[in-house]
Length: 452
Image 1 (cartoon, rainbow, N blue to C red):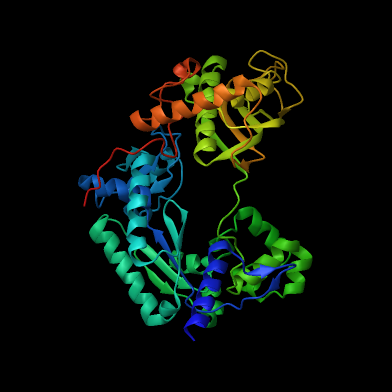
Image 2: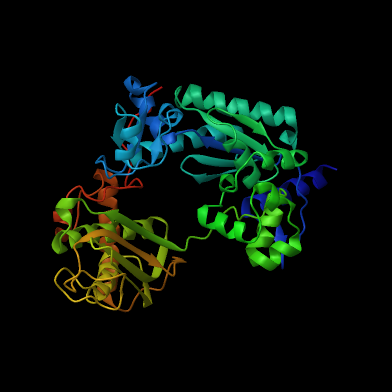
């Protein structure tokens, strides 16, 4: 009896942790069951963390943005700001709604530190969880907790412990359901500080209260596509049969059919396909030399992430947006796989040779129309990254001594910047970039204290 229970227990966790719910051509082998997943969603996380460490901001509408000019975009609004109608929007638009709104520059290292503290809390109660993002966590409920009373009790304990041990101003919403998708939907349905159980028998009533874009994974483009095939609401979507969705939406239709019915069809560990960074240039940096300096910085950041996540890249891509709304965009595959900054930059340089700059004729790689004089406008947007990724499993040492030197140099620079702070040692070509393109993910160890 005990052995059978352990086998059942382990088998279910293997399925949960790796998303192994169906095999072959959607051959479902696990029926959805209530009380399987607890989804925890931190409310207005970045803004709430700022209010946690700066008590004078509590109770006030604030927004967090990568940079604080009126053209910057608010990536997180406080609960108080959301109540007054401000969510994700341009800073200038937010100030029209709330003139007194406080705008803060994002501090990714601080948010990551709090993320790690929240993980420690979750680990006190269960090891069976995954961080879905910096502010979202999915917990696989054990058989002991797969019922109403125990799942609710666990949720309340986690919520209370986050407040007592991480931050008293941090709220989270919790959803409990059959799958990550439904548990996330349940959590989203009651914010802030909610706790919602969504069972299979409640799905029709639940979907009847939603818009299509309320469904995780449905944006306005997907909504338009669904409307085109006669699906006007989540309830319409739910009531469609498998044959119709398979015919009209192909494999995605099959996924949605099962997803809406509580099956666990979403991979728990998604495969990273690209690693890259993008940046909108400040007005003072919208010339070729400044843009190249910022681009160099973006390449170094992407290279750092390649090494930190233990990837090798087999290709690079580059996009440059210009002030006349034209765009240069190209990618290039590589015969050799790499992760060092120098090789990364050299491959980007090969693409740059094809890029027209202000005063040069527009090339076929540029989309939209050229300026009236047939030349390119100044650069305003940069995006660079690596693709065709594979895990670095101790690749054979290169026969080229120079490549090995580059790898060792990149690793040495990473260690210095980790120990003494991001950008302690940089390439001379990055100097002109200054503080442009700040880290959106934390580089090195964050240097903040947790304030309770």
